[in-house]
Structures are given as C-alpha cells and as structure tokens.
Amino acid sequence: MISSAAVVTTNPAAIDAVAAAGADDVEVRLFEIFRKYLKVEDVRWDSATTMEEAQIDSLDLVEVIFEIEDQFGVEVNFNANAKPAAETTFGDVVGLIRSALAAKARRA
Image (cartoon, rainbow, N blue to C red; front, side, top):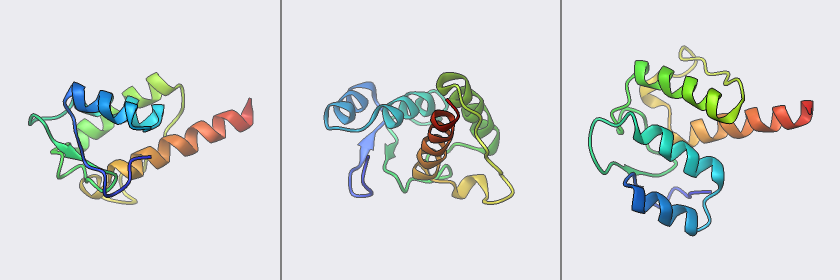
C-alpha cells in the first residue's frame, strides 16, 4: 500500500513506477480511474490526499464511484452525508474498495 510518506504523481509513468514499487493492483487501478477526473495535470497523491486537494468535486466523486463499481464488480457503500466528499481521502476510497472486495470474496 502507498504509505502516507510515499507521494506519487498521476502521470502514467508515475503510476507505472508505483506499480513497480509494490503498490497493489487496487491502488494502481484507482489511480487510473481518478486520473480521468482530474482538472489539473500532475496532481501529487498519497493516502491522505483529499478530494478537495485533488480538485475532485462531489459530482466527480459520484462518477468515480460508479466507474469503480463497474471495474471492480462491487457495490460501494459510500455515504456522502457521513463525511463531506471534499474531506474524503484517497486512502478512504482504497479502504472502501478493499472492504467491498473482501465482502464479495466472503460471499463467493
């Protein structure tokens, strides 16, 4: 997993480097999804990066969640009222996906 000290950028070469450095498939795939919604180039990410810092607004986040559900084949229980979307971190999203994948595996 990407530690809070490991900072990466969202350009394709940096994502490949993250994968080579041992980031798991979930993180790499999420970087690819989020990269489509960025409004600025070369955003720096770590597990503590908030959606606000990445300039991902609540509508973008809903679209990201739909794409995540499609790509990972899971249902994401994201409650925008529990925590403002702007305060949601990349690490929060990674955790949600890992939980959803674990629940899916238990049902299989």
